[in-house]
Length: 260
Length: 260
DNA sequence: ACAAAAGTGTTACTTTTACACCCATGT
DNA sequence: ACATGGGTGTAAAAGTAACACTTTTGT
Image (cartoon, rainbow over all chains, first blue to last red; front, side):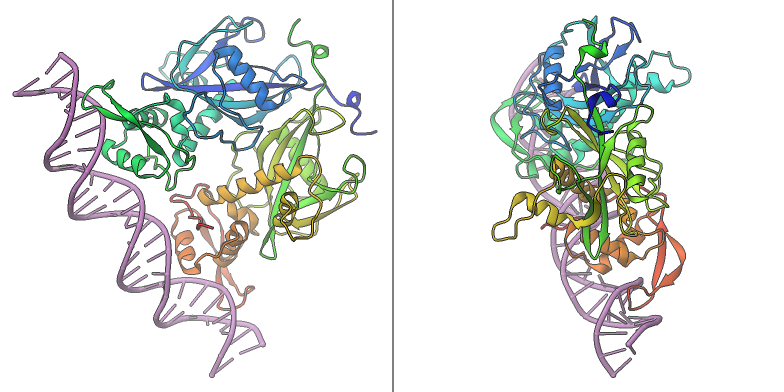
């Protein structure tokens, strides 16, 4: 038997699933879609869809992202531990996360899902696309806590399929990657202050950082931030300088994440 | 049209490809298989094969690894940025790397390949399995240099398909991951000396490290190394203490990789 | 005796941390 | 005047880099 006769192999469906993260109201939030049909009807799930014959994986992810949110992905890379140019530019950061292919992860057929991670600034409300009933941002702590079922807590339903695991992997990736890259700027609008960037780190890590040391660190790392020229008082207090993401994508030495 | 009617979707084949790395003769080497049939007949390629209906992705990778090399993978994890217990135990370390699915990456049909990264100690010669013509270890520098075509160098043929890119991603993953994890011990036999571990770092990074500072660093990090009790002189000179990989998988602070 | 690799001590330097203190705005 | 967040200075602590020096084997 030739190993390349398609009919000799089991039918696989290939999809992309999206972990779309943003920071709103000082909390790390993920985009979820309510399922309109079985299985898991009425449950929340990650956005996603099938890969088309003529597109690669990153294109499929970018297309689904645009369909579900209207966000434009920033020149995605095909695969691997990818960066996408200087973060914090116009669109959202998109990179491949991991692939999930357990035989029974979808009860209907064998589905291999290539999960992608998207980091976006806090933007307009999500718009539900196509067949999805509705869409919303939910704090990842709530979504993941539902999975673990903390005692004495009101029990929320976990995400459909293995999406809680995918979400957890995506969150972990974002948490660790902002340590050694300038990826955190992908959560910020094109122009932002040092304080806003710090609040991103605090929300993603769930810790408090020293504003003085943080300021020195980010402004002292060459290529991380470039002054945008103006100032703003949108956070109150003394006017803060506005910055743009610089060309540097790697942070060396890294931002240190305090012990829990 | 229901999105879950298999016949409504294009036929995808799903494979696993393996980047199997080891350190031999002070060089980082990858396992390659010579292709016995077209396309790319006679060219070197990464080992791999089709995912079967009843196995998950990690199981498929572990099975292919066993078929091609006889190596046993150390309790692989299904997906994500995975660890596999304390490194350096009995088998080889296996983790998912990335997924490659460009429409034209295989001229015969649409193939989505989930690449996995395997780190193994320098073990017996590879055994070619099944339909592979032969197998060998090759220094990754040679394999990747063939791709780039350094001027004035004898031009070797690059790997088949997009395997050069997959290999490059795997090597980059290994190089960066030994910075902040104890993964380098996966290249060592169950019992090893500090000098042997240092030579692993030197081979993977292609740099020279200060033996004195390296020794202090690894023995001073709690949980990284545990004394195995004996000593050896297999490297010549004064007898060196033997160690085993400790339970710690994360290295904090990380091992610093010197600038090139 | 000598070479080779293992391991310890010491010092200069860099980075992180903690916190005192001043700055510029809105109310 | 005062609260609020922005930003600088400084000194202690921790970690890194460079290298002199001792230890223990094989030849």
